[in-house]
Length: 133
Image 1: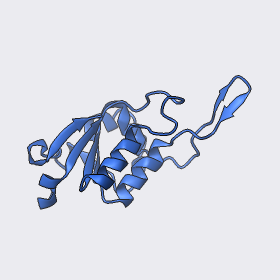
Image 2: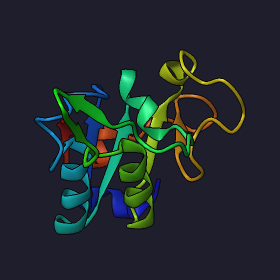
Image 3: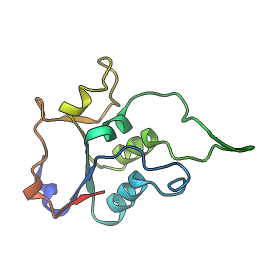
């Protein structure tokens, strides 16, 4: 990992989807991006269904139709993961959970690390704080 780990926070995300309308302006990965920006860096470990946020799928996020209204301002977690990587966060996806969804060698976004296979899980004790989001 590196010596910067002690100053950073580890953010663990296990739930991929928490509702569309409730989170259209600030989802859990938005919080992770802000913590990374404001708190001297943060790394993210995606577990459970949240590993799907790291999918390399480039199709646009679907819109949601409610009555006669179409909501197309919903956050796309894949974009949030790309933004985290671009802004210096390390993003891991847990290997055991990836195995449930992965459909090929290019399924995972470039830059996302596999945790638990050849790449070890982050050392939680070396972080400034560990937070489950």
